[in-house]
Every structure is written in structure tokens, then in C-alpha cells.
Image: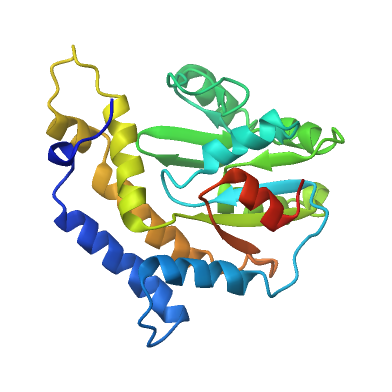
Length: 256
């Protein structure tokens, strides 16, 4: 189902979201009169001036909703990369693959794993709980295959704080949207694809249930954190890239 203009949320939300992105970006480029897409590209170019891991064991993807983490992770998975994923206490959605996008377990199983300290780094968002099963992650990283994770900052922090995994060669990448209207369209379309015509919900109820506004505001919030470091002094993000085409990003990162 494709979102039409009439199905969009109040477009004032687009204006306020773009303003939030600009606040974060203009903190880096004070006084810039460039457009938001130009500022996003400027951040990408700037990030490639510094050093980073040239032969990573693990590529970690960060961003807010609908910027491309899952899409790019699947793209690399099809090219032979191994997905490193968390356990989640819910069933997979229609577009998710168990064991690839995440390890999906029921809530009692998740509770038991957490109680027995099998999971670490427990977090939750939008009603889901998530945690890392360290033996599985260790096995992934020791497989000899290049690995990719869409779990962002939490995994970078976990690996650098875990002595047995601290030597992992990480390339941490933040995926930026090409522009904010495109991001809003992606988030809106994703919500509408989950709207069952027979469940009686209106489009407005669907947007409320899918927390459109919260998801739009994730991007600036995560971008503010992206310039921080872990407790061990490692940067949370090495490279910022505008995710418009996966092949361009592969070439830009030099990870073919």
C-alpha cells in the first residue's frame, strides 16, 4: 500500500522534524546556509577525513527508524556477510526473518533467559525487549566471516566493555537519510504496509499505533549521541554515510 498525500500525518510534523535535524547539523556547521540535504552530505564528507578500521571484523550500523539499517544489512547478508542479531521477545513481522534480522522468542523464554543471565545489554523500545546472547555473538565473530549488525551504539558499547570481545575490529557507520521528506515517506509507508484493511483501524489510528512522531524524532536524537565516545574512549561512530544506494555505500566504505 503506497502512502498518498491525504494519508500523510500533519505536515507540520515534517517542518518540526526538519528543524530538529538542522539544529544538530548546524552545531557542526555554524552559520551554514546550506540546505538540509547539503548538510547531510557535508557530514558524510567530513567523516571520511579521519582514520577508521580498514579491515573490519564487524560492521555496526546505527540510525533512527527507516534510514536503511535492515535493508543494508540484508544487502550485505546476500553478499555473504553474517548477520549478528539480538534476541527479541516477540514474533517476527511479515518482512522479518528469524535468525537473520533477530532471534525471536516468546516472552516466557525471554524471561527465563534473562533470569539465568544468558542475555546482556537488555533494552526495550516500542513494547519490545531486546538482549544480546554473548555466546552466540562470540561464535559469530569467530566464524571467520565478515559480520554486520544493525544494533548500533548498544553493541559498540557492549563489545568495547567485554574483555573477551574488546579486540573486535569494528567499523561503526551511521546511516543518514538523503533528506527529511524521504525519511518521512519511508516511515509513513512502512506504517501503512502494516495496516490491515480488515482490522477496522483508520489511517490516523495506524499512525498513532506505529508511533510515527516518535520514530521521526529518533534520527536527531541518535545523531546527537553519534559524536560521543564509549567509556573506553572509542568513538561510537567512525563514518557517516547518506544511505541512498547500497552499492554506492559499499564502495564508499571500501568493504567489498
